[in-house]
Length: 257
Image (cartoon, rainbow, N blue to C red; front, side, top):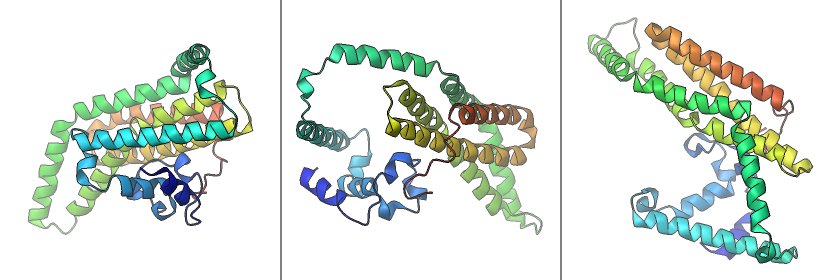
């Protein structure tokens, strides 16, 4: 990874500054990848299929190069700002970060988000036969070509709902943890904005997850009670997040809002 190339990309007017800070990292579904420098860099640096395989040495070598370049650029920026990184008190910083981490992980929003992640895992662990039966049912409908049935459309709807739920399963917790921890640090206006931005992305993920679970509830009527429990949990998490970050919904995400 070339530092000078990164700096040159950062000056490219086609890229929206900071657009990648408040996205959901789902590049395959994003309509704004042509405006995202982070996406352009990823396409360049990880163009080789072997660099996408975590079991391949090329993947870890590429990750090492990314971290190394990032560290070098961080040191350069610190030097330009007159900050001596080597002189910083690591122990004090480490103690502060540990305290922030402990408070963050015990925050009601973060705990609820972690609980949701586990609820998703438990539900899908118990649903193997459910999906097998549904696949057989849709396959039979396709063979019979029943005029009142649209098995392909329902299969697509089912896959999309599962994809959404799985994509945001852990993402919500990660973004809420960032939002909460940001409010605990020595805050300036930009930090509050970052917390609101992270909370907004989490809320969007919750909204989309609720919609996806509602689709599954309609498809799997026999699992109505346990899906409803998940929906109630998500709705409570959404309301807790909106109460904790009342300005989050109004946050303007670069390139999206």
